[in-house]
Length: 363
Image (cartoon, rainbow, N blue to C red; front, side):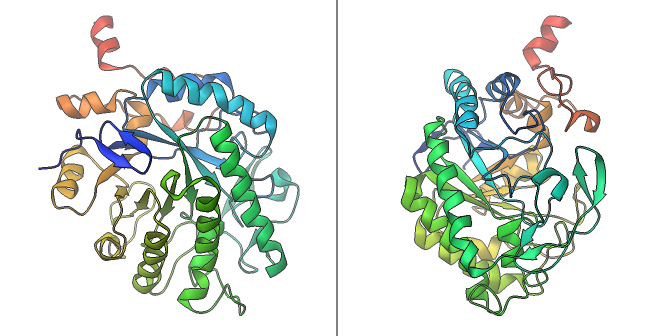
C-alpha cells in the first residue's frame, strides 16, 4: 500500500515523500515585493517535505496586489530568491515557485492601476492594502491584444524562477485569481475566443501552460486548480465538464503534476456542498494528482490508499510544524498555527514554531 512516506517522482523532482507543502501567502517580503533573508530560514526549516510549493509569487506588478508578498519579475527579486532556494537545497529539500496573477482580486492602491480580469466584475468584500481594507474595485476586461503580454509575463517569470534556483514552477489557476476568472462562468462573460464555451474558457489556461512548458520543460511545470465551489466569488454552474476539459488539456501538455484545492462542507477556510471533482479529474489526468485542503493523516492515507491521490499537500499544518513529516510518521501532536501572525512581517509565528526535537530539549 502506498503511504505518505514513500518517494514519488514529480516531473524532474525526486520527492523523498508524499507530504508536500502547499502554497501559503505569508507577507514577509519587502514593500517592493523583494524576498528577505528570513524567508530562507522559513523554507529551509520545512525542507523535509517531499516538495515545497512556495507562497504565491507575482509575475508582474499588475498581478500582485497583496502587501509584502514576493514577486519574480525583476532582477532584484531573482537575486533575492537565490539564497532561499539554496537554503532549501542545502537542507536536502526541493522547491518550486507558484506563479501568481491575482486578476481582479487586487486594489489599485497596491498595483497602481485598475484591476484586470476576464470581464467587468469585482471580487466581493474588501481588499487587503497597505492602508487597511478597502472595497474591491470593478475590473476592466483584458482585450485580446493584451493577452499575449500576460502570457509573456508568465514565461518571463518561469525563466526567472529557473535562474533563481527553483526546481520548477506551479501556475496558480485557482482560488478566484486571473486564470480561474477566465475558467468559470460566473466571472467570464466574454463573447470572443476566450469566453462562452468550455473550450474557449479553458483557452487561457492552455496557452499559459503550454508557453511555460515550452520555455522551461513540461516536466518542470505544475498547475493548481480549485474545481468545486465558490472561491472569492468565482464559481461555475457546471464544473464537471469544465474541469474535465482542463484536465485533458493539462494531460496533453504533460505537466509534472496537478494539484487540486478541494473545499468540503466543513472546510475551515471556505466551505461548499459542491461535490469533489477529483474522481472525475482522475479519469482525465493521468499524471501525478496532488490533493489539498483540511487533510489530517488518516484522510490523507485513505486517499492515497484508494488511488485517488498520489500525494497530499498540507498548508497550515506545515506552517506551524516545520517537522510535519516526522510528526505524521510518529503520530505526534501538532502545533496549532496562530492566525494573528499569518500575514505579519516579523519572525514571530514564522520561524519560531518548535520541532519535536526542540520541544524535547526544552523539556
